[in-house]
Length: 390
Ligand SMILES: [Zn+2]
Image (cartoon, rainbow, N blue to C red; front, side, top):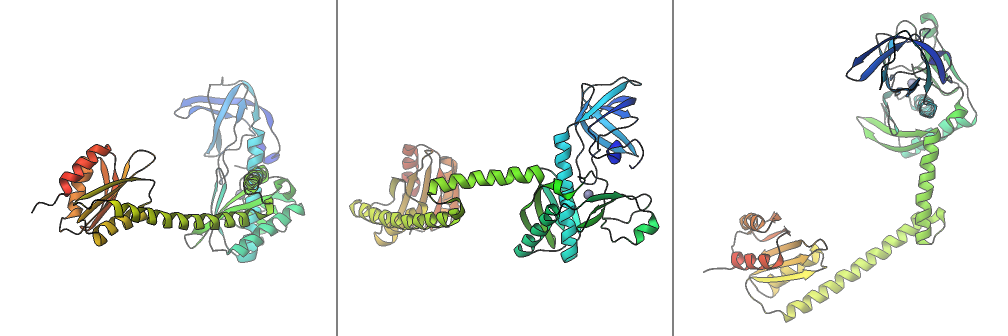
C-alpha cells in the first residue's frame, strides 16, 4: 500500500487534498470511487477506515483491494472530475492516538515479558490479546512504563528498511514479511511492522489506561483507552465517584471504605428483617386454623422466609400440605408448596403451571415458582388440586 498515491503515508497529519476521479461505479456497499491519490486511510491492520467528504459527497467506508483504495460514498461522482477531499480529523486523530498507544503497551509487554500481541481490534475500546498471562502488579507496571514513554515524549519514527537491514532489526510482526515493509519505531518502547497511521511523538498519545483484563486462551485479553478516549473515561469515573462521595458523605478518596460501611449496615438490617419476619410468621401460624391443604397469601416476604414458614406449617403444625404465596410488586405470585403426603408434587407442578400461567418446579416434597393468574383463581385451583382424597 506504500505507493505514491497514498498521501496518508507521506504526511500522516494531512487532512485535505485534491484528486481526480478515475472511476465511479455502483455496488452493494454504495458508490465505489477510485481516485488518483487520497488521504483516506482504508481499514487495515486493526485500524478502522477514515470517514469524511469528497466535495459534498460523504465517504462512509474505505477499503483496499489488490493495492487499489476504494472510497464508498453515498452519492456518485463524475468520472474525470476533480474533487476536494476532507477527512474527519477527530476520528482519524483518535485512531492515531490509540494505535500508537497500543504499540507502546505491546512493545513494553514484549520488552518486559516477551509476550506477543496475538489479536488487535479497535472498537469502542482497544482490545488486545497477548500470548502470556500478566498479574495485576505486572499490568500496573506495564501501564506506568507505557505512560513514562509518553512523559518523555519519545519520537515515533517510520522507516522502510531493506530486507538485509531488516534482518538486523528485532521488530515485532505477526507474520513473515517480504518486499517493502513499513517499520514503526517508538523509541525506547517498540519496533513493529505496521501499516497504520501514527502520531509523530509519544507525547501526543496523552494518556494510556488499561481499563480491563481477563484470562484468554492461555494468555490475557486487555482493553486499553488512549488519548482523548482515556481522558473521557477518567472524567466519567471521576463524576461517578463524585456522586458516590456526595451520597455517602465521605471524601472522594474514601468512597470504597464508605461503600464497605454501607454494605455492613445493609447486612445488619437484612439480619434484623429476617428475624422480625420469622417472628411475624410464627405468630401468624399460631393464629391460623390448620387445614389440609393450607393456603396462605402474604406480601413482602422473601423466599427463604416463605420456605421456612411452609416447612413450619407442615412439619411442626401438621397441616399436610402448605401453599405459601407472596404477592410481588408486579402483581405476580411467588409460591412455595410443601407436603408430607405422597402427592407427587413434581408432576402436579406442571399441571399447576399450565392452569395458573406459572413456571417453576422442584421435588415431590417441595415445589416453588411463580403464578401469574389472579389470586381467586389460584386459591380455587390449589384448593381443588392439593386436596387429599382418601
Ligand atoms: Zn500497528
